[in-house]
Image (cartoon, rainbow, N blue to C red):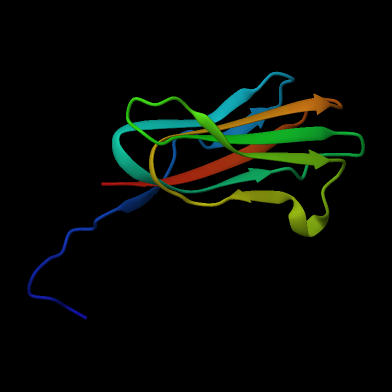
Length: 125
């Protein structure tokens, strides 16, 4: 429906420049980090674990910052073992509303270090 008055978008979802292939490490590795001076929305993230094989162990940690001057607090920690079933190879991290910062980290503590593709979206003004 056309309108005589243009309405600007409140938020624009965009693909992060931090998307790409990452080689796992034993130590926590940051794959997405975003901070703002105002509250914003982390729209979603995806981590492709299709390269996992029997004996692998991968962890994904999501931390948020609830205030402008606060530190990051772990919100979610996900553990994955062995080859992932065909319908569960792409891990989805849901949206996080009204946050001042999001940090997504990955590590592989067991097995030959694999590569994984990570994709992230956020919405800012």
